[in-house]
Length: 113
Image 1: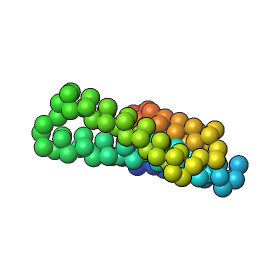
Image 2: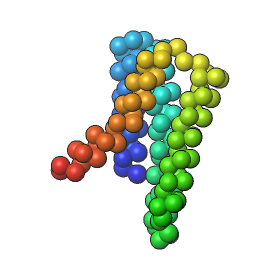
Image 3: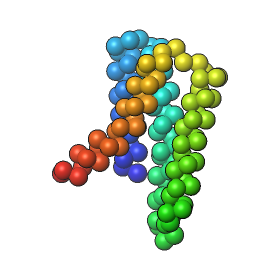
């Protein structure tokens, strides 16, 4: 759950940076990319936490959840592009990548502490 919170922080910072560097349209596009990744990851973290607290974690449950998470990311991106529109594809990709890589960066940083 902490990693999902850090992922949200990274996505918001990426959107603000895009907004400041390239304007409102880029900031909005980066926010769409970040949100499309963060929401399924946060839902997956809640699912894994509930499974662990119930004492029923399993590899199959993890893999099925991971597949649903990937499908949710793709569906969210498709829905945003179709209904909201993306004005800056590079900013959307930056928002996606920054938010995805935040887990790796934070996990590596926390491990060193």
